[in-house]
Image 1: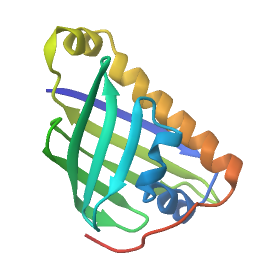
Image 2: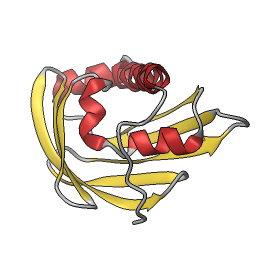
Image 3: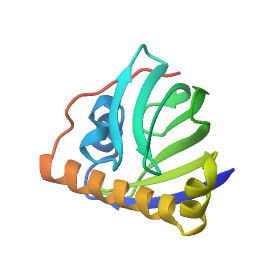
Image 4: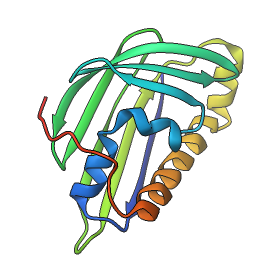
Length: 148
């Protein structure tokens, strides 16, 4: 399995950043290759994404969700992956997001892309696009404050 760990500090309060991250159906607005994310219920999501030039679909389950602190998930069908996103306040109005993810590469193209750091760069780009998205808006598009 491949793995990636990235972080970014955003000029918004932790509650705003966390609330926006819980709006999973908005992910295609800033995640490269993600066509759609459908929230099936409080714990399950259906993903459609282009990975290594191939369209993939899978379901994921939120295994842990603590408001303003952490969201963890694992795939329960399709593309194997798991990970967590942590949120840490950094003084007045700033938040550091740390994303950790493990994923299975399939086929020569995905394995070569992983070896060349494609996934690493994609995740870094996704975090930068999220930063621009939430900083430009100034406020979240919605919120889910429940715990899992």
